[in-house]
Length: 208
Image 1 (tube, helix red, strand yellow):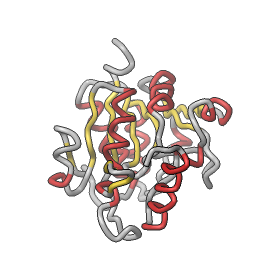
Image 2 (cartoon, helix red, strand yellow):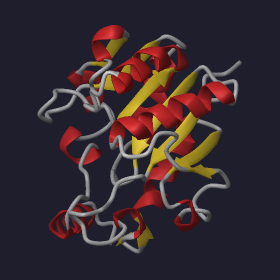
Image 3 (cartoon, helix red, strand yellow):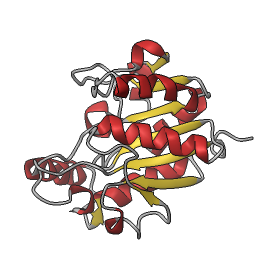
Image 4 (cartoon, one colour):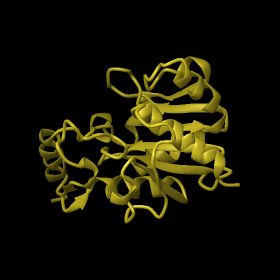
């Protein structure tokens, strides 16, 4: 079975959007909604793209399958948990999880994460962010599910709470750079000023 067939591509859109003030994933960027840009990138890497969102009615035109968090109120960890659980239910080995507000994420990079993944590992790209890697642009094997659920059960909601209990693989910075600038690919549009910056990036590329 090809990697794309054994992987569920899940866009995580369950945030409360408090910093943005409205549904950031549905915001137009260069005439295209941010979540549609993310969906196009995910579709490069996998054959089945779904959305995890706590307001499913908003995203029915993004994917034919949209579900809320299994256990609400857990933040990003709840989205990862739902995606990995969904992948297991669907008979997939891996859940490729990508935040809904990363307009410049690279489909080629996501494909590389899927290639590195298997049913037991967590595969993440290195970044220049505060954690040094990107947990919301990652491939999680369904074998990570017990560690994720153990973290939830002990009340640890940190998105990296289960990393010490799984096979963690990091795509190094030099290979990440082959697919684009990390500061652009992993940029989150969390606030209106981030959208303005993103428009500037599009302009510098001649895409607006």
